[in-house]
Image (cartoon, rainbow, N blue to C red; front, side, top):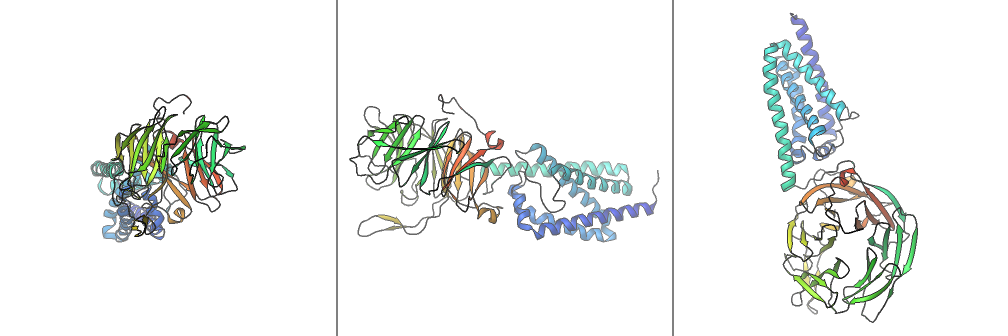
Length: 502
């Protein structure tokens, strides 16, 4: 079947005109909302690492193609290139829908109301239009050759970008977060009408809150954040030089302790009466309870006051297993090794997250080092300034420190870290009204995903407690419950858990 030259000319002209409209609108839309376009590429599970380059290259290529499509001499060549570009976009969407760990929100710009599948159909229509022009121009044999070469080249290019981007994200993440849908969302809230509460513990049925001012009061709230009860804690002996008493609840036991006084109490949640289990005056500045008799403490060396970790067994007589190598000194050994101490009852692992550098430590219950992992930011050394008071010899922070990781919590194999640093391609408006929680697998030492905790009535997150079904958060006077979505639940793995621990 012969096709007249006028039909070919008209079809080429129409195809060129459609591509000109498409690429002009697409490029201008991207450039007018460039930051949002770059953020969307940064959230892509395929191209995160290359978002900076691609966000500039794509609109530039589209505008160059528009220019060549306008020039009759280069119009057919430009349609060849346009067809190849639309094929790349098509392969990208196919990979997104079928081979990535999550499907991000579809990009804005051109046809922003369309979802990924609708975009796929739209792109394929333009690819088909380009193939028809190529067939009419050079014939079916030429089409088959170009399709084979272009298809192989385009698919290889997109798959190569995908694999290399994923490899870099896993091994040397350049501070790019991923916010897939279905991670976590606020499902309940309770106005506590007081900003002094902290989370003392969570069990299968209840949330336990302590109060920094009413130090011997415990508040019990059900998991739906509805019913609330209050009890007073009674201590067996109070002849200690207390500075601040903190409460912790684990299972059917509760603990009251004051690190400065070096005293620890234990009691039953059935009557809230506590007896002394340690009064040996071993001062500590943080503590994690392993089981009924064992704890891990963070204390200081007597000579240089650098922080160290120790396991303390107190069933009959106090026994210490000290590891002074776990916390690594960078500047002073005290401020620069400050952090949050967690214990995973599911895996019998201690996880310590530094406040001022991008590192966390995983050790077994006897403080044997298993791994030093990194959070995804790039702050490898603590940025703090220390001053020494001449009269007393005390050291103080001479300026506000550069805080990297503020809060943390563990559940199953997951480590949740409240990072204070904004990553690449993150919307500043969102960042100004929310804090971020990064989720890691502390058994495979990989970053998994992130989600936002939005400020509630203007209050930022100040306390975090992770459980198997939700993250409990205190923001100002509010207790919030963030239920996990399937994206987080699917990442959880369990070893043999103690009875009733899950």
